[in-house]
Image (cartoon, rainbow, N blue to C red; front, side):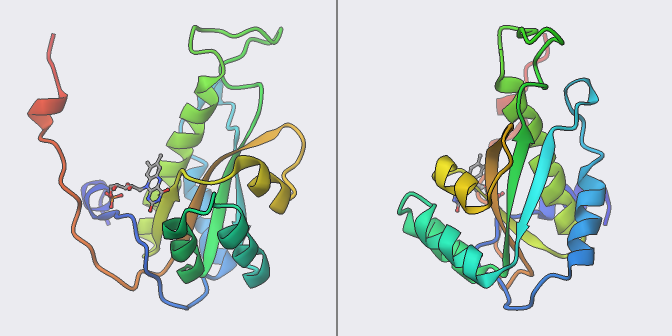
Length: 180
Ligand SMILES: Cc1cc2nc3c(=O)[nH]c(=O)nc-3n(C[C@H](O)[C@H](O)[C@H](O)COP(=O)(O)O)c2cc1C
């Protein structure tokens, strides 16, 4: 799949086949995602893959802020991924001060780039994903036993798509760009 097709065909998928994803395939996705750019090449993103039905159910039912839409998506997905990041590197100087006025927001910026790279790599492998921003950060961290010094960036549902959906409407390029 070329880059144009991959960018255009990646969709947020909310219905999945029951088929489990081989760990080797997820490893290949991470092997591509690791080429994402990051602040001073700090590479702070970490991927926690939940395939255990029990843990996935707990996260779906107890960690999504009672947002039933996301609970339903996670219930249908054979796996979920928590994209976490190592704190206090991206956006920081060696002495612990912030480099710019964006302070620690570069951490989430890096996690976002890593997440989209992961989703595009997954799409290339025939996998659908759905990024989810509505979750209880503390509960997710506790559920996956996130190590000290890492934070939850985002939760993704992942699996082989059981739906084909058209892209939601996009603004035209001319509405988004200004040449100065
Ligand atoms: C930061 C972020 C948070 C999102 N949170 C959710 C979510 O909680 N639940 C959900 O179903 N989709 C969520 N989405 C998916 C968007 O709704 C989706 O990307 C958008 O509608 C465009 O559709 P597409 O991804 O198929 O192109 C999120 C996407 C992003 C980037």
